[in-house]
Length: 251
Image 1 (cartoon, rainbow, N blue to C red):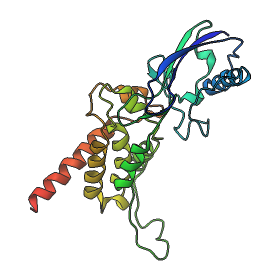
Image 2: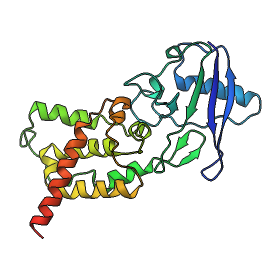
Image 3: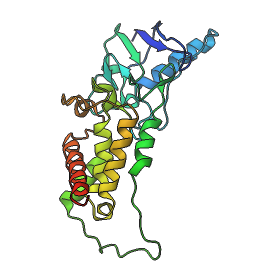
Image 4: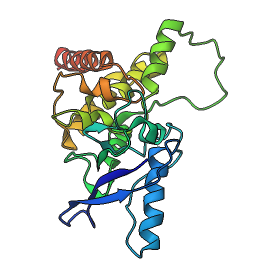
C-alpha cells in the first residue's frame, strides 16, 4: 500500500509548527498505525533527516499515551480503537492521511505529535483517591457492593486518560475524563466519605487547567476508545450540585 502522509512538525513548544508531506510506499496492510510511523522514521533516519516524534508505550490499547488526531478524528476512523490498535488496512491504498497532535490549550505541544497531558494528572492529584485506616486488611465482605454498581464502577474505571474526549470536543472539555474518575469513587462505599470534597477539588482543578465547558454534542463519548458513557457527566453534575447544596445548608 502507498500513502501520502501530512504530518504536523513542531520543533518545540515555542516554535511555529507546520505540516510536512511524506510519501510512503510499500506499507503492509497488517502494520499498526504506530508501526507505519516507525517504518517512516527508519526511512527518514536512513536519509539523515530528523524522525517524527510521537508518544507510545504499551501498544496494546491500555496506557492511552499514543493518542493522535488522524484525518479529523481522535485515534482515527475506527470506533472503540486506540491509535496503536489501528491498522493500515483500515485506510484506502493511495489515501492522504493527515496526522496531528491533540489540539487544546490545556494540552500544549511538546514536539511534533507529543502533547503535555500532565493537566490530567493534576486533576487526579486534586482528589482522585481515597483515604483508608491503617492496620489489618478489612474483611473482604465487610463492604458488599451490588453487581450492577460494580459493573458501572468498572465501566468508569476503564478510562485510560488518553485525551480523545478533549480532542473530540469543540470546546476542549475534559468533563468526560473528570466524570469517569469521579464516578469510579462516588459509586462505592469507600469513596463516600470524601465524595463532596473530591468533586469540588477535581472540578476546580479541571477549570483551572483551561479546559472548556461541555458542548453537549456527545462527540467525547463517540470517539472515546473505551466507550465511556456521558451518563457519568450527569453523575458528576449531581455530585457537584449536591456538594454545593450541602455547603450552603451548613453555612
